[in-house]
Length: 332
Ligand code: NAD
Ligand code: DAU
Image 1 (cartoon, rainbow, N blue to C red):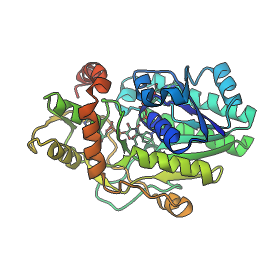
Image 2 (image 1 turned 120 degrees about the horizontal axis):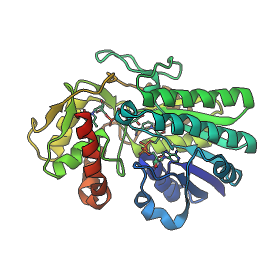
Image 3 (image 1 turned 90 degrees about the horizontal axis):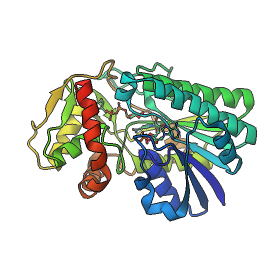
């Protein structure tokens, strides 16, 4: 039996990770530690509730983290403040959770000699020109743009320092944009899909030329399990499907899949400092660990995700009004 502590397991990627682990790794005992911020929901774990232990708590609570880490073999650290627009509006929770929270986890795994996998993002590298073939690699210099990505960059640096100076047994991964079920309606795909389902118009920032690399959450989580099984301690792995699309094109596909006219959306004010393009070179994880995305093209995964939102209004509707009220304050 492997005892696994999953931080942020009531959030989007963490909940999907817990589902995936319970279904595919019955030799794992899963404990979720989650503060249930606005982004976390116990209902996302309802289908596996009787197969896991849930602890409602904060990753900055050192005594609690110490006790849970002492009882585990491996920590998979997803917990974070994750939304760029929120970080521009109020950076403080991002510093607290992403930096101080990661520090708290690191000190506990150091004390107890436990294995850690740290989940990070391609946003730590800043952005790439829109019309180029350039890609981020594991050796690209960090150049974050937003308070969110700056704190994620800082958390990666802490992990690397704890590996080098204290011999902590940690790996890191930096994934591209994820999509799939249980993603909060503040994020691009769920926001647009749920707007259409409610008869409201999707909202495109600026001209919509910014490019993202869309990776299905199950492909991300499969990569995390491969790293846990065979990744080399101290190493970083970039994860990305290779499917890059401009926001305008992706919105076009969403509208097509929902049988809406191509122009049925509003342009809204742009995000300050809006990163132009992200693109990960995932050669290392593909060649070293044999990772392959099931969804190399997002069309079928996106269609399934849309169907999930269509059939699970009970899950997302309670968050929708408050989310749109926050966007209204931001003028987006
Ligand atoms: P999310 O916002 O959906 O979920 C975050 C979870 O962390 C929530 O359940 C929240 O309650 C919990 N949390 C927040 N602060 C906490 C604290 N102080 N203590 C305990 N729990 C706390 O985020 P997500 O999209 O699932 O992202 C998960 C991780 O993956 C993050 O580290 C993020 O940086 C990274 N990531 C996300 C993407 C993406 O496209 N969403 C891509 C690459 C990497
Ligand atoms: O690249 C990985 C990152 O992807 C993760 O680290 C972050 O946690 C995750 O939130 C995501 O960041 P983005 O800022 O790329 O995702 P978001 O869904 O907020 O926006 C995607 C793109 O769509 C971005 O260019 C902004 C734009 N956008 C977003 C919203 C919410 C719109 O045009 N309209 C919108 O309504």
